[in-house]
Image (cartoon, rainbow, N blue to C red; front, top):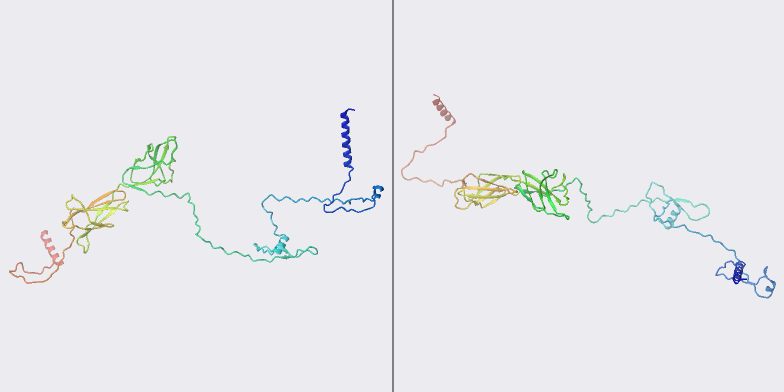
Length: 402
């Protein structure tokens, strides 16, 4: 027999012996770790040789206890949802817990009857009786007073509300220059600027002028008098342009052209009572834009040299303190300028009298005259009556009628 075969047989025999010893080994029941095994001399059990028993050695017999199989209890997994399951308000156990803990519950809906509550939690015998829960009054907390400033609700502006336009500039010349600046531009430069004009407050727009480049100012010329509104449209070299103003768009600049001078009417001179060295010069003005008029008064004795009056100017008149040494007749001139800068001049008739003092006097006495009497005899002078006038008229009428 070869050595290899011999080694294989030896290994197989060892493996069979090991398996037989494992299968024939006595099975021992599990023992609690804290309970010692009961040891006592007992009669020789069956299957034990008498020779071993007669030797006087105690035989240890392990008491075999039945194996108790405890079923595996597995709790259900916790719900993954964060929302708590709904609570059944009609559950009697819930009311029993509330009564035990003295929890008071306010019933919000008084129309529903109170829920029954278990009167006792004891088990066995008759089922516990149900006692209706007493109805509790609805307790409302008093309102807490607000402190601090009153909240303000800002109403958002409506789409239909237009933004007020800037105040108008008054001009009295048709040739104007509009100043502007470029606030945003790309790589390409601004190649042209267009002037868009409205005459009705932004309802209609029209392109009225254009200039090459973007050098301020934009020079243009106005037409008839009235209101003007302007917006500029910028055009770049790449073809990009500012959006044109649509209907309802407010102007960036409002202008009023007024080239009409005010109308002046000088009134006759008036004397000032108890002030003989002063006279009053009065006038009337009419103009569309005369909120802050500029008034200048001058006088002249020869019509060539005009000197300013030392006068206190009020609304519609001026009190002039006349310098000493003036003749009783002078020339007076008034110049008025409106808010747009238009001026007008008016004159009183040539050489008006500034001596407006009415002479007055009274008798102070009587004395006899000396020397020869001179003059006719004094007689009473009366005006003719109505009858005498008719007689004289009839006389002349008959005379010329013949």
